[in-house]
Length: 411
Image 1 (spheres, one colour):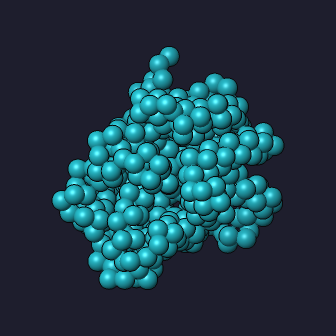
Image 2 (cartoon, rainbow, N blue to C red):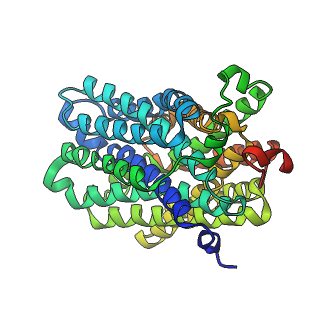
Image 3 (cartoon, rainbow, N blue to C red):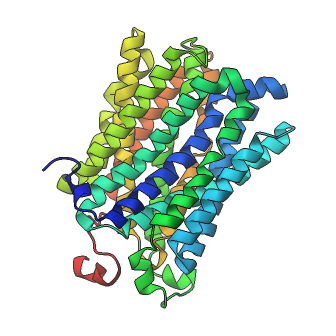
């Protein structure tokens, strides 16, 4: 059986749903990562230290739990599809407004508001997709959905490479408003989740729905904190590492090549480990990917040539996003039906909140070691990989559990 064979078993409507969910996360990540490419340019325009602009990344990540809770509860009450469309419009509008920020203060407020909208997308898209497909397709689709994040990173790198010298950082954020067009595709081709439709008459309060599940929720938040420290620790300051450590100009072909290979590795890893988790289990796949990241670190940060640095960038993201590729299905399988629109997204984004200082912490660690960003990023990823593997090993798994009316049969 080929890696992509589960996709062939989806009907046309299910494929549209998966594609829309994938594009939603891709374009959301695209808008987020645009800032990571222009940190230096923004700091120069506003006449501030680089760390003050990096604080915008913290605000975006810190705001995401609010969006996950707000949009997740709306989705559990009113349906996944309409709230997903509202969310896409909002994060696109806040991205556009960022282009016209007159001061750093306004810029940071807009990044916070963007974070609120960004926080809602992942949970909505993942629950809509997972509730619309057969259980045996979840592993591959999970990896595909999570691959939207590096795809967004790649699009951001591509747009930055092609346009930064022509339209500046403000022009990039204007381009970032284009994801709003995705709403037209969702409205025309994507139906509501069948699991939500079947249970929409049995809606209760959040506390009642969560009764008996708070311990699980706490564990998922800790797990997602480690996951977010893992991914953001390997991505958010990578372009800054290119500029300051490798001395590659922001619009250079070499800088773009490294980011492109990094994201290609992420897509390969997400698809492979997501699909592989159907055979060996969710936890085993995540632990394997996390631990395999450690021996790749020297090549990733200290490769002796541009070629070896490129190989390291590719391989580190095969492992980092390989572990992440299992997350959408793992969290949705562990979540009760009544709060599947809310719990995965809130756990994800509260984990993001706990991990929101990652870039700032790495920048601080680098400062303690003479500005050595390579050391800071290497030490961070090695430590977090071990913590993540331990948390996954200690936690539960619900591989292939039924959703909706069929859930009890598999539990």
